[in-house]
Every structure is written in C-alpha cells, then in structure tokens.
Image 1: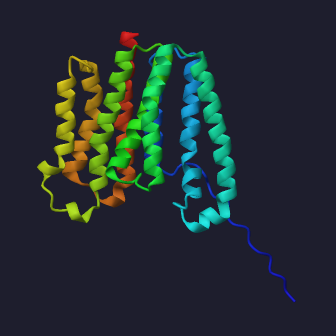
Image 2 (image 1 turned 135 degrees about the horizontal axis):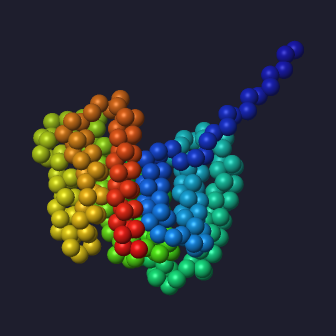
Image 3 (image 1 turned 180 degrees about the horizontal axis):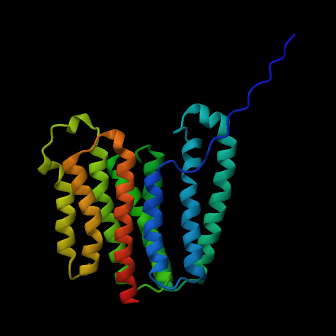
Length: 265
C-alpha cells in the first residue's frame, strides 16, 4: 500500500506586491534624509514608516484580499509578520518622536489622519480605486514630512516637497489607470490631459507661496510622463517599461528636490 505524503503549501512572499508603492515611499524618503542632516530621530521615524508599509501585505492576506486559499495556508505567518512589524513600527515611531523636536511631533500628528483614512479605505476594499490610489500616494509621501523636519529641513521646503510628490503622483497615476480601460478608449487626448493640466495650473497658482521655481522644475518630469501616457496611451503589455520610465522621472524629481532642500538648509 502506497502512502501519499501531503504536500506542504508553497512558501508565499509576504512583501507588498504594489511595486509602484515602494517608489512612492522611497523617493520622498531619500529626499527627506538626503536633503538635511538626519539624526537618530529621523532614522527611527523612517524605519517606523517602512515597518508599517511592509505590514500592508500581511493585512491583505488576513482580510482575504489575496484569496481564501492564501488566508487559509498563510494566515498564521501573516498574523505573526503583522504583529512583528506593527510592534516595530510603534516602537521605532514612539522613540523617534520622543527624541524629536516639537515641530516634528506636530507634523507627525498632521500626517496621522492620512494614514487613518487610508487604513479605512483598505478595510473597505477600495484601495485600488482612483481616490484610494491618490490617498495612498499622499500618505506614503506624507510620512517623509516629519522625517524631513527631523533631518533639519525647514518646514516650507518639507511641505513644498510633499506637494510636489502628491501632484506628480496624481499626474502619472490617472493616465496609468486609464491604460487598457475600454470605457475610455474613445476619450479625446485633450480630455485625457485634464489631470495633468489641472496639476500644472495648481503648481503655477502655488508659485511664490508654497512653491519656488525649483519645486516647479522638480514637478516637470512627472508631469511630462503623465502627459506622454495620456497622449500616447501605450499598450497594457508595456506596463513594465512604463513603470521604469516613471521611476526615471521620480529620480529626476528627487535630484531637483534634493538641490532645493540643500539650498534652503
């Protein structure tokens, strides 16, 4: 009689699958740390942000968003990973705020509602909607503001950089979402360019108050990418190439924002 040994479920990665989100957190964080002189507080707050970011995938597994089989087979690992990352995020964040100046704590409190709102969106299963993706981008970029202040960057530069990232991510997110959407296949190029035009108009309106010329220049690479995607509408099979082109735009934006932060520090 032949005995059949049950197969163990294949080990599943619990790292976030949304590759673009890595850049939406990393690029602003690099500017926040590299634009000043980060001390222990900035590094601890940065580590806390990454811990909470990495907890996103275990949350989705436990909520069943990756399928019932994934929750059944890997729910235990996901719960353990979530507990570990949650504790690390809280501990690093609390210690970072304890060592931080009052302005950094105020900035962290100001960013907290974004995180709470995004958590509610995830719980409702709407994180892939247009508003959910924009909120995610604003939240991921927003956590860099207290890190920037803790690194010695002035509040005007920190807020300006955050707005550049939010507007830039809006300029590219909306066209990327429309790629492959059949219901928009017959929309005119001018209509598809409306989000980019709105971003440009807002950037010009903010010029002289929140934005300087360097911030406007920093926004340009992402706006150009968004405009190209809206006009050219590449095939969905080219999403990988599109992703790398957006990464290139983010690197250009990061370089200009670093220059702006260094100039004002």
